[in-house]
Image (cartoon, rainbow, N blue to C red; front, top):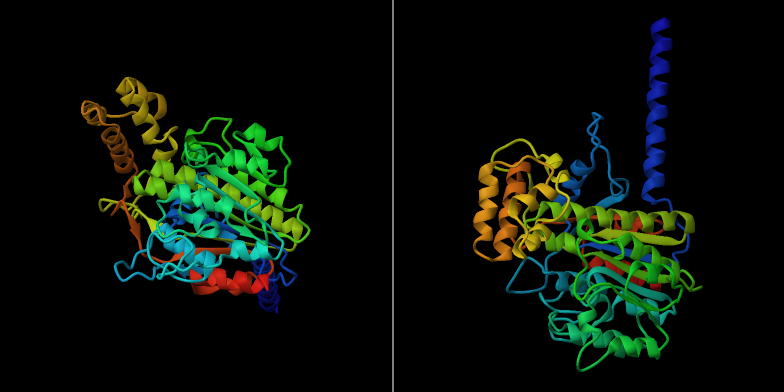
Length: 445
């Protein structure tokens, strides 16, 4: 009898725990949300393959606990998407083709911005949102004219045509109005040119223009052009206080766009996860992953309070062929990465401009380096080539942490999809990158 009572008690406890866990997961994913969708926030971690989301979980882990804690992304994972382009020359995508697929629902060739294989313009979900009278915004840590944001707001045959992309942001109207209300990121070089000053033109049409965090924070205009660097912003770990984070920009964009009673569409890109991966720079990757995670949390927190916001987060592709563990070692030491206080590129720039090698390395790497490691960087410095110095520093960190890389280009594996809010269940399972746009277009109907 005692055994039976004890068994019932244990089973009831297990059932209670299981139900609690299930309810927590149910609530976290937002799949229960069946309300009207007023706003859509689409976050894209450029180059953010599964190895990066996994590695970032190790990087953020609390070493004082036995379990491996989840990041902000974990509770909202709903599936994966394929990333291949529609290009007879390649089966691995670039950012332009993948972003065009996610923005328009149509696959295209690598390098294409908002057009199909025949160079015909494709309507983006941002343009469809503007047709409905919604507020619209693009946020990025790259040039705001870079491949991913451009695919949502421009139409050119080649992604390198950044002046034409910037012109399109101003010239291409929807229902007689500028199609993008909020533009925040880098790239002033393509807006202030000898042939045209788009900043002056935007301001003349009622936009505010901001160039640093303080100006952005103290400005409440519904329409704003914010350019915080000539090209891409510095990596999060290298930024000065006057440069906004991705979370700062995302929060500012949401606050402005939420003033539109018809709702809004906002695309937020963590652009430089990809840039750091191209460079095989694990310090830069983890820095940019953290920047993106904080922006994701801003979106989730807003959506939870609002109740009518669908949040989607994914990647356009993966980059670098990053492996968690290299050289046959069954370890990956994120603790090594945490000792580095600036990116290798930042350190290389200081050394290239005359700073001492050993002095610079000891200033920014809080880890005893061997004489051989210091000599490696000194040898690179004698070439008087900043890229060689950068590569030498990266080699030390990659070797110490057992971070492996197979390429400096993109790779073709599927990438994760995270969602929250009403409509989340529509992107569950194995989907294609075009499905994002197809679902969003359907919502906008």
